[in-house]
Length: 111
Length: 114
Image 1 (cartoon, helix red, strand yellow):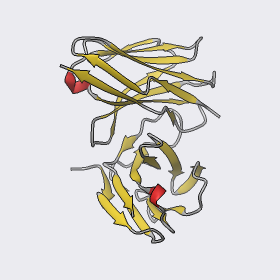
Image 2: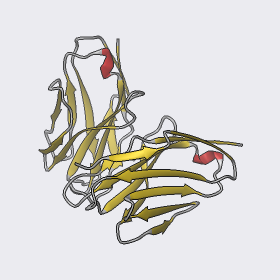
Image 3: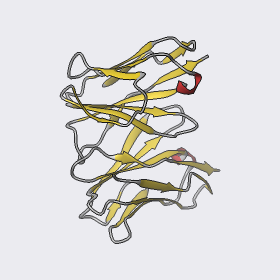
Image 4: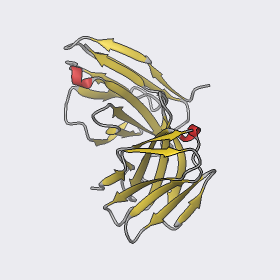
């Protein structure tokens, strides 16, 4: 079945710096990709949903890149601010199964 | 109003006892899930249900038993509790079961087993 590896497990950046979180997956038939954000003490909330047909997806203050050839999904936070401090989880699915989650990345943005 | 309700928010149990974690969703979704999060395993998928039928079970232990009395309910019964079961248990739901549907997570139940 699908295997999702997420890196790094912990990431610390200064305010205004960029932060990059990457997930690699194994199933070439994966078609749907998700990023979730979990603020401290809170539940997970959907950040973005990506279809395999779109390689670049832009949100508010972040960009999601999908490289299907390398089976790699990345979340790039541009100009990170302390409010971005949270755990981030990717999720990947093929057409037949519910999404599988990565292990998560704890991001700390220091002022 | 909260769309996914999990009860209780905090739960303390003694080793060997049995507890039921409650989950109700009011999103009109047809699929529901249970996840567990602890320091050892950041987010661990446990079960998925669609229209009250079990679709996927990634939990090795039979001590964990989902119970679905209604389509919008998916409770989790845990028997013979162990300290290693201490974790936050998240319930989630999606419009339908399958790959394209994003999941909505409940606030979690933090279980501590002494």
